[in-house]
Amino acid sequence: MPDYRIVDQAEDLEAAVDALVRTDRYALDTEFHRERSYWPAVALVQIAWDDQTVLIDPLAVDLGPLNRLMASGALAVVHAARQDLEILQLACGAVPSRLFDTQIAAGFLGLSSPSLARLHESELGVSLPKGSRFTDWLKRPLGAAQLDYAAADVARLLEIHDRLVSKLEARDRLEWARAECELMRTRDLAPRDPNEAWSRIKEARHLKGRPLAVARSLAAWRERRAAALDQPVRFVLSDLAVASIAQAMPRNQDDLGRIRGIDRGMSRSKRGSEVLAAVKEGLESNWRPPQSPRRAANDRDYRPAVTLASAWTAQVAKAREIDPALLATRSDIESLLRGDDNPRLARGWRAELVGNNIRRLVDGEASLAFDGDIVVLEQRCR
Figure 1 (cartoon, rainbow, N blue to C red):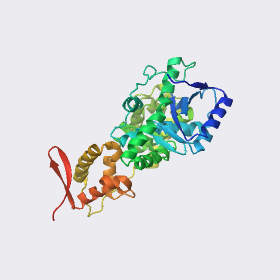
Figure 2 (tube, helix red, strand yellow):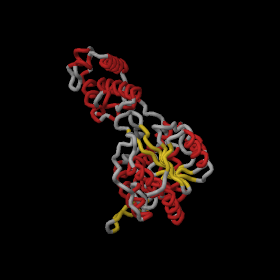
Figure 3 (cartoon, one colour):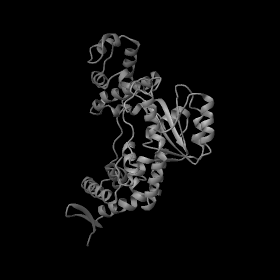
């Protein structure tokens, strides 16, 4: 097991940060929970650099000093960084100024969103401890097995970074990976827009007219209340209750109390009054969802082309050993053919590999054909 030390004193964290800002790179991981809260609750921060590994206890020390590390020029090596970045932004108000995501990098080498354990096995031939995968990281004290598990996630991540960089350089794909990591680093980390919360409720997406406007207003109220109380949205009101209230459009406490999923006590409480206010707001808003982009009258129906292009793009990804989801999604292809502003497939390495040829296909300059069991793109004879 790797050697590590626990950081649970403010002065020790400051000393660790002093050392880290002088290094070129560091491995980082976090342990967190969000099952019982709206915001992710960070429970441990693991950092490894040179021959040192520290496990920082955020229940004992303020993570604010990590802001200095985020602002330094040191490269943060992280696996599947999306949620770690969200946690860092919340905990210390910043994300790393440079990022290398090993999961993204592995996607350019033919691995489809590999787990950290899989990367350790494929690159180093070692197995990570598994026993503490589903541990309660917010419980104290943490046991030796839990701490060993957490430390192992970062202890050899810099070795994996070296191996991935070497392989990417050999394939002339290092800049591709760096560009994709920068997109991850700079993505929008703003809190979810409450007014878009309705779109994540399956039952609400099927509503129309006034019930949909009520569902939007009610879902927005639920989102704001959950954030204020730091509770999961389902603790405030279930998805089924949101859809049921939206369809019933209650005007008073008695109406509300008769709806499935709403008990009479809740209907007569302050929360019930807030629900009724949200219903009223939705009814008065006359809101309608924005229309999808419409094709011009002379545009073709690109759906058959999207289907064909998707099949060919998947074939290209397989042949080039690139994660298909990393190369192009169906939405990417639709965006390109629809003529959206600055689609991903119109620029950089994606345009080179598939975007330009998809345009040729739709313009009639190329065609797709089966060659045995594969789809190939051919120059079209005119």
